[in-house]
Length: 137
Image (cartoon, rainbow, N blue to C red; front, side, top):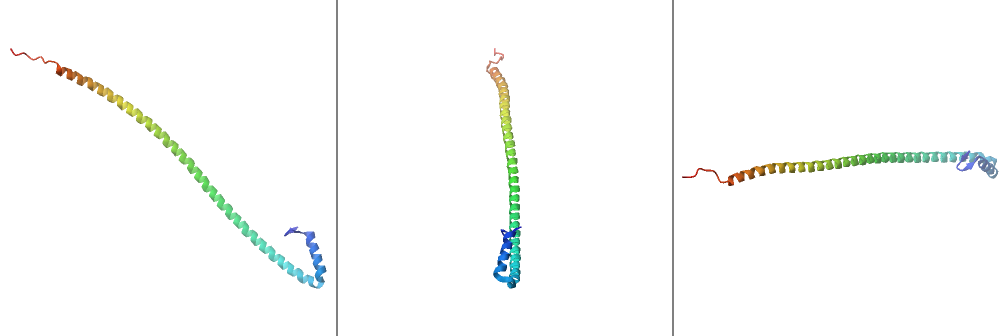
């Protein structure tokens, strides 16, 4: 058994030396006082250990809470990256679709404009021809 860094043989040696120094008449009184001091020291160390354990448990809980918060933030970052990728994909598809719509509209306009141009050209040519009126005689 090792209490305060003092083993059983060392404690016995201290007791024997105390008995020799103080004598058998005062030894019981000194032993009682020593016992009280030992109890007081033991109570104090137990209280300190409880406080330290409580502080360590509190710190561990805070660390666990912060770790959970960081994991949540990490999950949010992953979600935001996914959303960004989706937005980029939609933007790319939208640009491609818009470009295809412009090309299609341009082709349709060219076709319509081309047909209208040939009709208007035919109309203009017809109006430029001399009309066949009966000649005045």
